Length: 268
Length: 187
Image 1 (tube, one colour):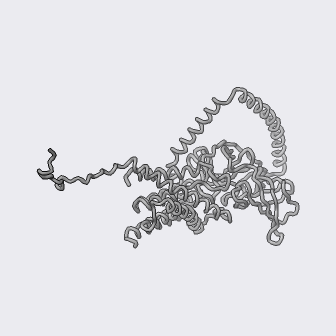
Image 2 (cartoon, helix red, strand yellow):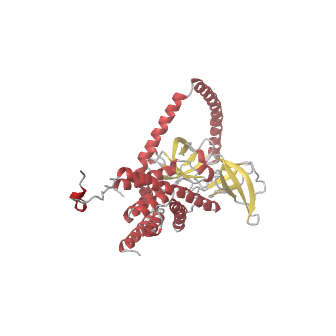
Image 3 (cartoon, rainbow over the protein chains, first blue to last red):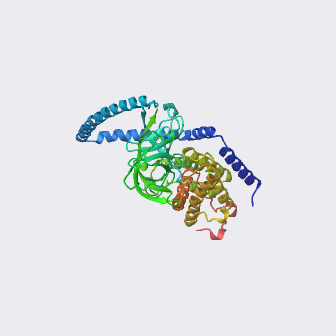
């Protein structure tokens, strides 16, 4: 038998939920940031313990391993310098050609290294938290990458932390192009296989018989959020839908989204 | 239940929500985090008053939403409804029995995400769902089913440690003492 206090509690929580759900988006973000600030001490403890573990790891590593790593990195650095020189030459040529054609020049991207500090506590969103926020000049729609490929975009930027919507989330549709055939497509939200967050579905804008497994998928630059040419993944298999009007392909993402520890944020 | 147990209950909810975002758990295998907030609300509903259950449901929901991409407030109503229903029906539940705690946890673990998805469907959000969601819900139910008896034992232990022990009263009453007569006096 319900008492008066029970009715009051039900009505109170119902009204609170309605009020919160009907808040304007900007206010929702602020409320979230304010409530999420209660976890800042825990995020701080986690960062401090990570740093402590890293330092302890450095003490334990033998000198020979460190020297081997140093030599390997020096070799890689030399190779990358040569590649960067070639890239700079190509960039200068590209800018000259764009100027000749009258196209707007592409601004250089600045990279900011961010640490992944948390993942979404639910199963139906594909997001993660990074340790940079609006005080580090991060804004929504900034592109997030790992060394392997595209990771997603910033969906909410708090003061000290930001939320990244990963590729495959509803908040992160990506316009893509197949490198070999130049066919255009869109990465849709969804998981195609239980437990495999590394697979996403790509819908091509038309029936493309030339699409096959092993071809590389890049960002197309359409849509204005992601710059063109960022590696997204590799086609695993394809199928035709809606009376062969569209081709759908499963794409294995280049970046392992389950094992991300550090990511790069591209800021203009 | 004393004040310490209530503080530990809220502390456990705060830590469990943070842990949900930190530990890989079963994410690598099946994309499911170790989320025990429904089990905590179930424990609160079966052992504490409506005020504590209501507060825990609201705070837990807000904490989960603050770290997730869900609109803020989505998780509040499901957690509260779970606590409210269990609190009203707690005289019918064998709450001291391990198997009852397991089934309550299992139902709560699967029911709360299902209700949350229901509330989400009323908003403009587009959660990533599909056939795999059923398996996710079952796994979340199992996680909470296992966690619920464990939580009962843990909080019972904390209650024993931090609460005053009940005084044992003797059955001796001076006014009812049998006074032996002279004939029984030992010589």
